[in-house]
Length: 242
Image (cartoon, rainbow, N blue to C red; front, top):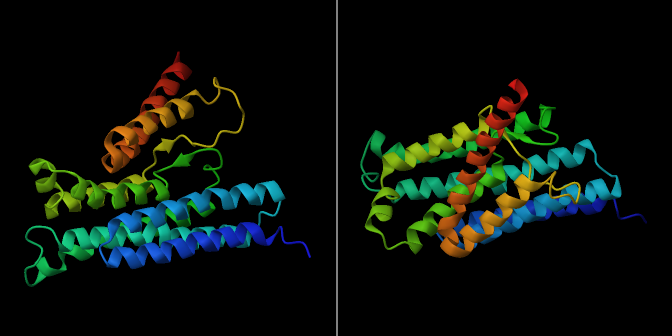
């Protein structure tokens, strides 16, 4: 019996399983383990496509499974985390519309769903991305409560417990997920520094930031990814005009 066709989909389902476990820990407000299992799911998400290409068993079922798994791991979990952060934020325990404020955190889940559906039918995103990928956005959002727990800065504590700033982060997240901003892919297809210099430099900078700042380095890395992509796009347009 040839088991190769089942390997990528099994890995995808393990991604979904990791997302379900992350949800469990998120609801318990154990953000560290929620982060670990989301990171594990994202790791598995990378390798399901890798094995599908290696075994030449890519198909529409795998595409749909991949998006459904990502919807939980990289869409639902960050929405729950933002909902809980808003629930614990200053001024969010009132009555009426104020009590409904934390539910705005699920805008991240809605935006992630729209981004994943759009990705499946967008033929422009084969070698790069348009808009922030849901895994990167998930790591950005889920790292925020860890930054809050790690930091002893009153400024950071004040900012990340302010409901209006959290709403601003939510709206920025939803925008970046679906914005028409080309972002470079981290996939290295050829072992050439010249052709992959941007990816290699970004990965090295990411390692340095994560070692230096630990969990606080995660949102910095994601913002750096977006910033480098924007700068690179402008430089390429300038070279094309020259």
